[in-house]
Length: 432
Ligand SMILES: [Zn+2]
Image: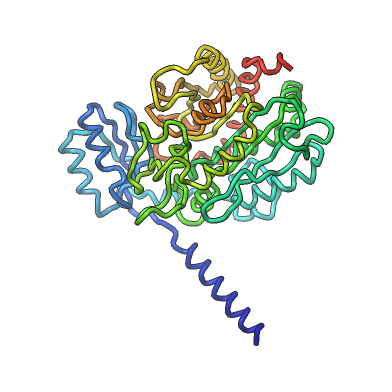
């Protein structure tokens, strides 16, 4: 009898899971428009539309003039939307008449057999595949690699990271047991930016397996903390329900999620974020309202004084950014940050000619408070704190978040080149 009950309970559970995962968001006949506001009035008119409901999905920030903004518009909303554009004379063009078709094509080319195979950088992986790979690394390299839990997610997932430390027993030693300086690498904050976690795992693999002398010296000179998935719920949701999801999955009224890169407790919500829970840049009800950012920050706090470099990986636009986002005032060691910036963007282009621009967040892109790079710099006093906005370039059309998988390796290669140059220029290797 109890076996039958267990079976019934299990069937119920399976049904619940199916129910939860079956509701994949579809964008059939959604039109994709590219807008390019030329006046402040036009910008304000577009901002008024953002966060106004499910029928409009903004893929880019609406902050500054002349920037291209891609918007998905539900079929029933197209006529209204066009009349707002025409009324305000907002320059625009239709990029795609059926967003779902383009999303379907991407799924078609993904390898259906990937779960059984070797972990490679020829494809994007699901969360559990990457977590299994991280755990396997700790078994394969017990003296160099240890897995740590950097935090928790709203839905109860772990935020897993790996620590890489060469030297006697350093893989399993407590933080601070050695005097080597630390580098913290964080990826996957924004769920749909799949190239970000893929790049962080590429870096992990290079640190462990590369035979290049420069890579070896850099890998073995520091303690590395790498967290590929800072927003695991969001990432899983991009696989199960909505490829274009950005935020966490905490429920807020009728909408879900806060923007985890507007939620850090450093000049939180002062500028460039939204108080509307339906907006993609919702700052959350308070700083560190999201368990993901709060617990990750608690973990990083234990490393205070040890870290000299903090790297946050996002996409897209090919930008390298440094503090601050909340003000145009330049940070105290601006000269050092800028010198290292110049060397880094030169190095990123060496292999494939990939062009990066950037600077301090506030001037280089737009005011945006509450990002992790500012918190690491301002609160944790990490002297070199940067954010990479990876491939493709900002002029890419609405496929920007869906970088083809055959670009994972070239992206990883040029980022390794630039990261090595960055570390060298910071002087950290000379000070060993
Ligand atoms: Zn991002």
